[in-house]
Length: 526
Image 1 (cartoon, rainbow, N blue to C red):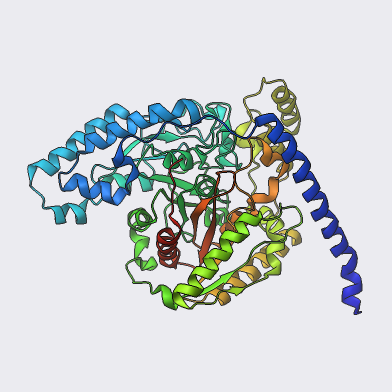
Image 2: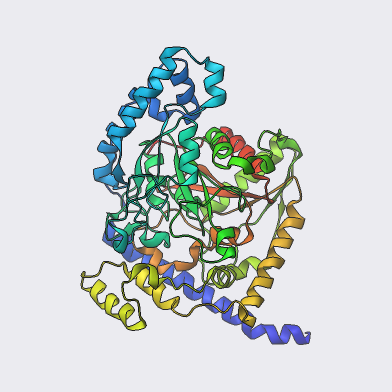
C-alpha cells in the first residue's frame, strides 16, 4: 500500500459513511413524506383545445396561413390557465386584455395580405403566438417580484432584452409564472403567491426556480416559455415537469432585465436565460431569436450529423451528500446509450470524472459574492435579523421562507476573492472545465442525470439540499445543456436526462433532443 493510499483511507471511509447516512435519511424521510402526502394528488382537467398540444412553430405556421387566428390561440391559453391554476398555482399575473389586443393586430397583419407567408416567416416567425415567462424576467408594466415580499409592489419599467426580441418577432406575452424566493431554491414557493404543484402529481414539486414556467408548459397553458438558470433553474423544472429546457452557452443570451442581477463576473457567466417547451423542435428557433447578435457564434443552422457525434455518459456524480441515482433513471440512460448503438453504431464511452464529486464546494465557492443573500430579502439586514425572521417564520409571521432564511444564515459572510480557499476552488473549476473541453471537442455530447430522482414531495428538498448539483455544476462550467424527457416512472412522474456539449455547440444538444424525442416520445400530457 502506498503512502498516498494510507493517507486517503480515512477520507474514503468518511465519504462512504456520509453516503450510507444519506441513504438511510432518504429512506426514512421518504416513508414519512409518503405517509403525510399520500400517493396521489388532484387531477388536472384534460386539454380540450387541440392547438395547445402542438409545437409553437406549428401554431405560428397555422396563424400565418390563416388556418387559425391568434385570438383563438390566446383565448385557448386563457381558458386553459383558468382551468389549471386553481389546482397547480403556476400563473401569478396576467396581461390578457393587452394580449388579446395584440392578437387582433397580428390577425389584421395576416388578413391584410401586405406580407406573404414567406415574408411573415422570415420577419416575424412567431407572429401571434402566446408565451409566458417567470416572475423575475422584466415585462413592462407587470410586477417583477422574484418571489421577494420586499418587492411585491415593484413594477418593471421596460421589457427584458429577451422579451423585447420575442415581441419584435411577433410573439405575445400573456403573463408571469411563479418562482421561489429570490429564485434561489429548487422548490417553487414564496410568501407572495404560495406553492406551485406538479401537474403529474400535485403532492410533488415542480422544481425551481423556473418552476411555475415548467408547470404551465407541461399543463399546456402557453405555447412556450422563457426561464433563467443559475444552478439548474431551467433544467430541473423541465425535468420534473416532463418538458424540454435548454440552458444556453455562457453569455450567448443577454441577462438584461433579469432580477436579481449578477453580483460578480463569474455569477454572470453562470446565469443564463433560455427556452422551455413541450417540443424539442421549438428550442432552436426560439434560441435563434433570444440570442440576438450572439446567434452568429452558435452556428445554429449548421447541420448536425447525429451518426458522427461522439457520446460519453456518466451515471452518477458519486457525491456523498447527494441522493443515489434512481434505478429507473439509470435504466432510461442505458436505453439512450443502447439506442445510439443500435441505430447509429455509436458506442458511448462511460466516464467516471472524479472532480464531479466536488460539484457542491466548487459551485458554492465560486457562486459567492460580496453581496450577501439576506440583504436582498430582509429589511434592515443584520445577523440578528435573520434569527428574528426564522422565529417569525416558524410562527407563520415572516414574509420570508424558511429555506431563504437558512440560506441567508449560511451566506452571511461575504467572499474574499483573493483568499486561498476561493482561488483553490476556482482552480478546481478551471480544471474540470478543461477535462470537459478535451473530452467533448467539437462533436461530443455528455449524457448525465438532470437530477438523481423523479420529483420529490413538497418540502422534501429540505432533506436533500445538494441534489441540485447535477445541474449546478454545468452552470459553473458554462456549457450548454438540454433537459430531455424520456417517459414516466413507475409512479407516473417524468424522468429524463440532460445532454451537455462544448461551449457554443448548443446545436448538438438541440439536435440530440429532437432525435430522442422521436425515439422516446417526448412530452406526455399530464
